[in-house]
Image (cartoon, rainbow, N blue to C red; front, side, top):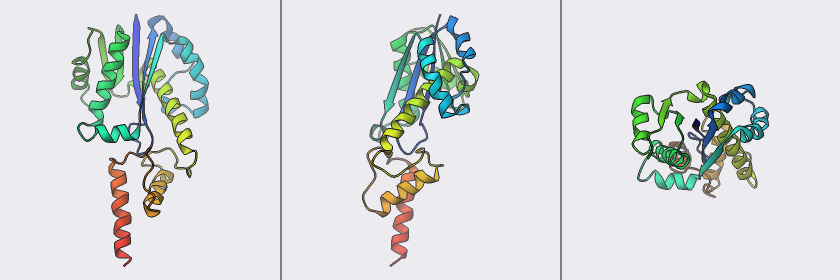
Length: 216
């Protein structure tokens, strides 16, 4: 039986791409994932995640990684929302692999409603499991989370070249916020890898603009 785990990295970031991973594994290799220490990527160090990649590739039947750049996210969000964007990509991954079972880290609190949204876009009658915290509870999803996270981290490392250290790209990262503020203060504008439709960006623009006005 083929099992497909799906997860993403960078969903809440204001900088950089969203990376989604579909990790297809034969049921007989699931125990192997447990044996090598697969778990939610957030519970592993960068070194641990990187060391697991070749082992994950060896145990996988197939892997797909989808990178959605900041500019594409901004463009699509003018007509839809991030949940719908991810749901469509998840369905595409499922239809491409045609697995027997799919396990997804649910994006919404209502797991059953979310599962039905996926099922409505899937061509085959595979079993769909959609749960919150699936990346912690299923190694198949943990494997997908690790591959997505490592891929996104590499993308961020590449984007850092030629720019000041902007940190992880998350709004909670002070380095990221300072980088965005410097972009506004310097009037050079935001690089293409910044998600300009994010509220974080708008708040920073408004804050800097108010400061400029009050200084007169």
